[in-house]
Amino acid sequence: MSQVSNSDASAKFAIELQGVCKSFRRTQVLSNLTMRVERGKTFAFLGRNGAGKTTSIRMLLGLLNRDQGEVRVLGLDPTAEPLKVRARVGYLAEDQQMYGWMRVEEIVRFVAPFYATWDHDLALKYLREFELPLATKIKHLSKGQNVRLGLVLALAHRPELVILDDPALGLDPVMRKQFNRDLVTHLQGEGRTVFYSSHLLYEVEPVADEVAILDGGRLVRQADTETLRRDVKQFVLDRSALAALRDDMSVLELQRAGDDAAVTVQNASAVRALLDREGIGYRMNDLNLDEIFAAYVAGKVDDDAGARAAVDELAPQR
Ligand SMILES: Nc1ncnc2c1ncn2[C@@H]1O[C@H](COP(=O)(O)OP(=O)(O)OP(=O)(O)O)[C@@H](O)[C@H]1O
Image (cartoon, rainbow, N blue to C red; front, side, top):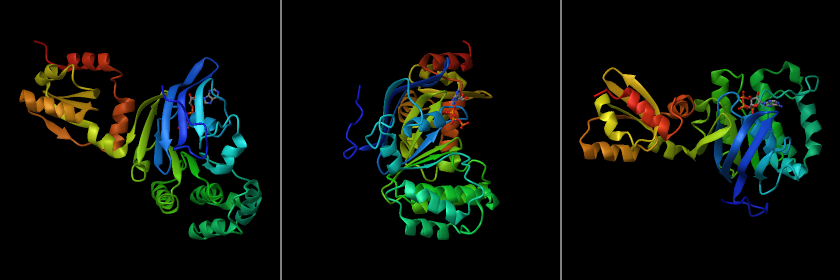
């Protein structure tokens, strides 16, 4: 089993979780979560509501203790050194509430002293670029302006790692797009690591280098986006051909389409080679990340045995 890093300066990974478990009372919320985020990457942390994303993020920030396992953020244990971690991390919470009575310019001055590395000129630059009115009280900002202000406060101390917890929650589709554009413009390409949690895959698809899919507190897949697109495909083939593939498909989802079966697999090149070898006709469909995400979290197939049972159910009886 690999070990987590112990030196912050040399840590290759901005985030490392090793065998992390967490329960609230008797409910297990995270089960043996192991995940690594390389520095400089934009990493999408995906899961449906309640999958355990916020719980994981609270651990990364040292706000919550794990029951088991190891956590390192920039090489530091956030439970042991929460302040050191917070000084180097920018954090934007979902639905972040700020002091409504403060003016934009006041909250920037209020937050600045918490960070030794605060760059006031940078804060002003972001405020200008995001067209945030300095003299307006926070309670009078629109939702979109509020999220952008949160981003300014999360970025102006030039953090090495930025953690965004469903940041675009509650924004309309146009604002979400704009927010992602802001993100790309201001974060990517500066060597920063961005850890972006969301339950909307299409939202992060254009910006993510790598994706982790969390389902019911378990990591079901971590891969770079290109690999996911290459490996996960849908095959449409005659149901009678299913039996030949029964033991060699890594099935995520299986649907009947008349006499055909539509099978989403996570080992497309192997399945393709097998079908070609067996002379079985098929159509192979590319999937977008939304469809891939749905196959992992909504597909009825949990494991190899489940996949075989599903194939048997769908294959025509002899
Ligand atoms: N303090 C707590 N006490 C009890 N249960 C909790 C607590 N915090 C979270 N949970 C439960 O843990 C599970 C995971 O919650 P979490 O907020 O981490 O999910 P999430 O993936 O961030 O979901 P969302 O997208 O809805 O924010 C949920 O079932 C939630 O009800």
